[in-house]
Amino acid sequence: MTQQAVPASSARVRPVVDPPADVAALLAKGTKHDGEPLTMMKVLAHRPKVLRSMISIGGALWGSGHVGPRERELAILRSAWRTGCEYEFGHHRLLAPGCGVTDAEIAATAVLDLDGWTASDRLLLTAVDELCVTSRISPSTWSAMAGDWSEDQLLDLVLLVGTYTLIGMVVGGLDLPREPGVPGWLEADGADSA
Image (cartoon, rainbow, N blue to C red):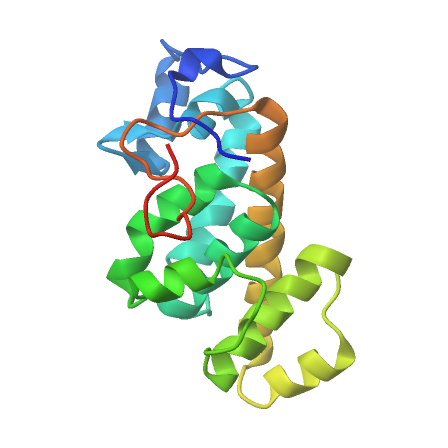
């Protein structure tokens, strides 16, 4: 299941190399790694309307969403793990510590057992698991979350997991490689997969 960090030229659909000015402007707005647009964004540049929509959805859920940064990162890491998307898991391994997620918590998002999590984190991860496995949140999990989460937060959580499930399918379906310097899965011994 390990996806090697290899040149973007190995992707099933090659990234756009010299985009027209309007697409280059979109790429400049999108997510970057080391100052460069992500491989996924450069591949989506073949479809500028789709690229624009993905950037817009990402901005709505990332910057102005209702789910707090820590919870957002836990949900994204868990979604990436559940969908087998090492690409996104690696990127969010880099982002999560800045949002208050510890290295131990990052590793624990990639373990089925939820022992050791706080009750609220366990409930969040359970909701992500249910969405990833059944495309639904069970009535009991929804009720339990609704005690602490607003309707806007719950809506954004579902949209967040759905978006990262879509990203996992795009990355996996196109066999997009991780950018150089982006870690992979966390191995049991704490070493990065290569």
